[in-house]
Length: 83
Image 1 (cartoon, rainbow, N blue to C red):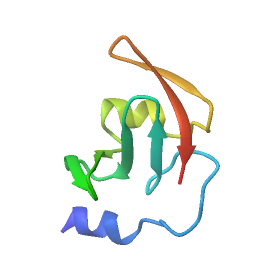
Image 2 (spheres, rainbow, N blue to C red; image 1 turned 30 degrees about the vertical axis):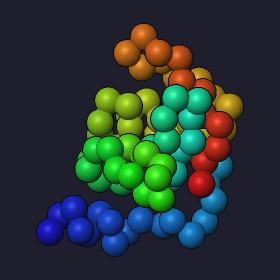
Image 3 (cartoon, helix red, strand yellow; image 1 turned 90 degrees about the horizontal axis):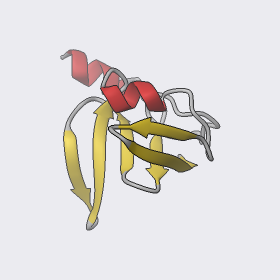
Image 4 (cartoon, rainbow, N blue to C red; image 1 turned 180 degrees about the vertical axis):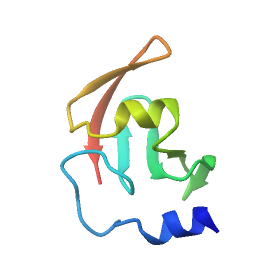
């Protein structure tokens, strides 16, 4: 029930300038959807990691902008696009 409430509150219509709940984040490594922790999903032959804002990488991504770089598990990840 709590997860459904989180999903219902996501604003996926506007294009944010910073990563927030509901953002689709395209990086040089992987693509992430910040919502609830569901793990790896395939949509139209494209892999996405559906992650929570409380996950280790979610906490690093939140509030970041296009062009920002984060370091996660010894990897350098560049945010290319935010939708």
